[in-house]
Length: 179
Image (cartoon, rainbow, N blue to C red; front, side, top):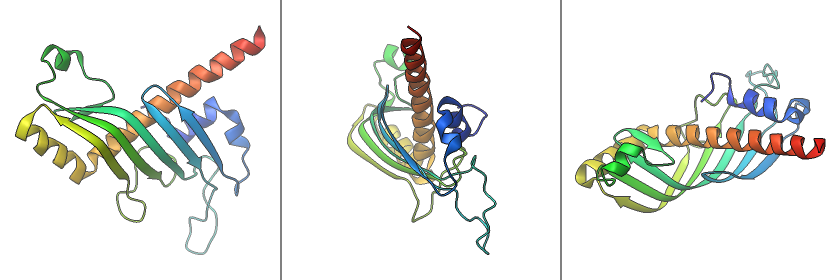
């Protein structure tokens, strides 16, 4: 993930997001490399107890509903594709998660943190799990879920997938309009 906040990366790729009024919101639907996404960029809201808006257009809540085709858990790493090492080892130490549905709420759009407490705790459901790592895989997966690391790492994957796909699509639109 870039060092730049997620919302700023989105605004760099889609400049029209910079021009949204403070009370406006927008939704992006995208089929990308690793999943299908609905990204809702909310309005700039009051951040002070007295109702003053101190947030800037660079700080907006982002809510993402994602369906990822697969996630691979190898050790404490989570990725959308298995590593070469895991493939060479016939995925013996891997837990494969199929049909991962995740709902993520990023309160300020920075992309570094997500809310892990209700009512904005991420929801993560898995349609099917293939555990090739045995008891160790079960322990690792349970630990990743309980600490919230699975949701955080999935959010990083979602961010990279969204940004790469948007960059590619934007470049293709520019190239086709030049021709």
